[in-house]
Image (cartoon, rainbow, N blue to C red; front, side, top):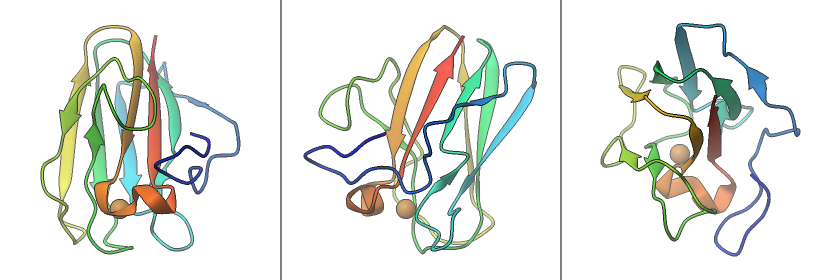
Length: 122
Ligand SMILES: [Cu+2]
């Protein structure tokens, strides 16, 4: 979530991981923050088996949700992708985290602006 060679530090990450391990429905805004170039919240903890829903706010232009184990912002235990970046509040994407681990993900068009997220699966 901090600055790396290929991306700025996450826009709205203040060092706090939002604990959502008691929640069965977890939703993360895509296009959060003042300028829409952030996920909200950007760092969460969930329980294994939780389906996480990314919900586009319509702010900040085109976004996607991309987790690549190699070559992004550090190691990720998960690989998933919402596909090509899309714009508009009617978009959403979901992924179910069956096993514990750490997912790091980012928005392809806005990685350099620090649009990054992380999920700790407990
Ligand atoms: Cu984006």
